[in-house]
Length: 109
Image (cartoon, rainbow, N blue to C red):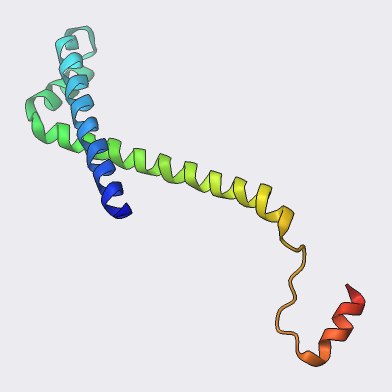
């Protein structure tokens, strides 16, 4: 069920990005006479392509949103591990110790 919510959120973000990119193209196209020739050409091309340009821009915006969310989650997980887990976890782990080596390891610890 959580995957369903994640998918709905992703679709919602995509639709929101479609709306914003359409509005941005519309506003910029309205004032394109104020820009240089190069920017006028870019804006005219985006406005002329219509839905195709909006979907491409919304896809890029959604991808950047996903990268941002993943980076924030990574930092939060890293912060949680350094603040909480390191306080409760032992500082040293012994791996692959046989039963005959246990008394020697306890003496050293």
